[in-house]
Image 1 (cartoon, helix red, strand yellow):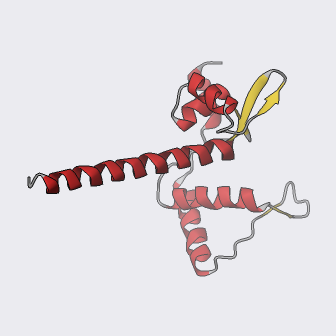
Image 2: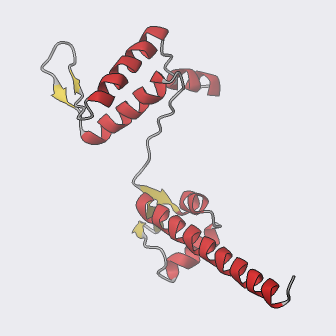
Length: 151
């Protein structure tokens, strides 16, 4: 299968009528925020869609109603060390060191480490906060030095 064929299979084109319907649904949702989505297949009894999928659908509808293109991707619960390192913004060897030192929790699948998406995101957030704090402290030291030197 070529990349174009794969893209065409994964692409759903929304006609203008669907965009208008998405606008009407989102306007109703703004007035009544307690949304519940049900699905009926081939006339069978409607089943309630779970909360997480409802959020995905309403987010997609919100994007479509603005005339934009939503991109929906399935995210795994666990990441390989290569993917986690890229997501966090460090090299894989640095990530492995952090795992060995207990800075990042991981579990093993066979002989391979896996990191949960939540753990990777939490560590990245913590790392960014630390970096911002260090930058603020460095800026304050620079300002203090400037004051001392009367520049």
